[in-house]
Image (cartoon, rainbow, N blue to C red; front, top):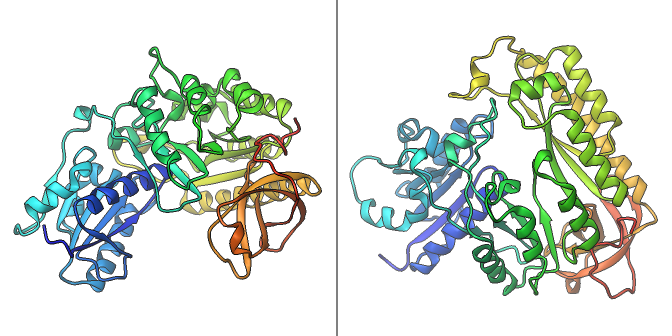
Length: 446
């Protein structure tokens, strides 16, 4: 290949996509390409798509148009979940040169160099049921934290979700192999690893190895100060995992993101979730019993078919009363080839938007209350590597975003701070304390 060729990347969707984009980018650099910004006249554009994001086709079209405006002669490749689900549709977008499926994206350099000068659009994808291999990935570039992919695919088939169709069966590497990937990250400047995947609690799929065994192994790795669990299903978040992270672990932080989706048992059953509301309540209460100041985030879907006003208010009131810290609110949108797409009692879009707004306001109230409960307490912050209008920002172990007058010497350092007050931008003013510690347990009531 020609050594001076430049490649740019754009990632839509989740932390898992970001970890894979970063790994794919390194494969280009190893092959002699130069990684550049999207606006730096790249020869090749790679767009990593998402199937969960609403209007995936519109986002794809917009990015292809932008790429061709930056460089009309560029070679545009579309990968990711949407590419696996709708390859033929994507291929019809003006300006697209190549579409690669779930397996094929990891051999992207080979595919490009074999087809870059071919006429028409190249489409390479296989049946998702034939995808068996696990491709390890981790993000690198932000020296503060890395997203480490520990698992891929999902066996749950919730009625609203296309992920099993886009990523295939649940699978992972062995614990030993995963620890080796984590050690690669530990050899860099990165201070925090965020564990990511589609359904990370399903690590091992019921075999001899499991998620609990993995996190115990990760906790022994030297060179990483903090591990954070990105998201874990409530039915897979066992008492032993909670107890280990909050009592015994040296490096796991007191922050859990636990998908709920609905506070109505009737809707949870229709969604084909693996738990009822009582299980979710038990998980939250168990965390708060051990660590009153732990942060708990929640995913929730509004406007699912059959969500009556009573069912929505059941969810709203449940969340309002629950001791949680913030919400990620998703407005239900129809997805082809899902069971929910065939259900009756469709909720009007204007109603979905109204309910979504109500829950987003509730999320702000929950977050504000959580922050207010921390004023005057101490925490451990990992400072980011940027100057934000004269301030340096960072996240504490229990996911409070703090700010401090900018000091370049603080970048990528871990410091103990005292929470002073909440600013108008929603961040916490902090005072750095003269304490030499990187403990994850300072602010969790232990």
